[in-house]
Length: 84
Image (spheres, helix red, strand yellow):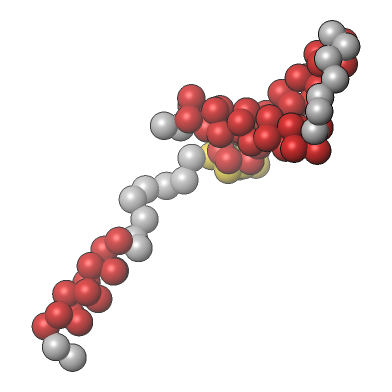
């Protein structure tokens, strides 16, 4: 094994190690990962957005793309807001 390969192996090992513990929440004695909490909150916000759009009589051109996009937007926005 040459010197270049050894350096590459050490660099790869350093880049794949973890930096700390994963963020999690204690909900009723069970730990849930933070991404799952953000995903559930994003889905709830999407349902509320759908209810608001229906209440205001706003029709969407392509709801098949709109609602998953809203869910992703809300989920990632919550993740960035709380776990930056």
